Image (cartoon, rainbow, N blue to C red; front, side):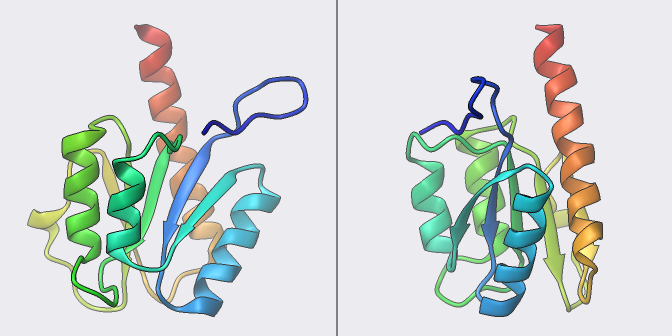
Length: 135
């Protein structure tokens, strides 16, 4: 499932994994207004299922602490294994174990401004577009 504009250009797709409804709605709205297509997941398990699907995903934005069995760490590790080129933006209100971050990732602490997440996604998608253009 790929997202495209009317002229056929590919919209970058961000997978947003956040179990707090209002935080998720705010960041989804911000990303959509900035021109991103957004796929939402409430749990790590949903995100992992999306990782194994044919859904186009260019960036993962995940809370580290999610309800359910799978954490944001688990989601990022799954993406690194199955889709190694997809960058990850982590967020958490708790202290971070930087050693658990996958390569090509960044961390934005809670509370954050939506613009902080937008800038992180823009920076990471610009890097992946440059890398794919070099191939």
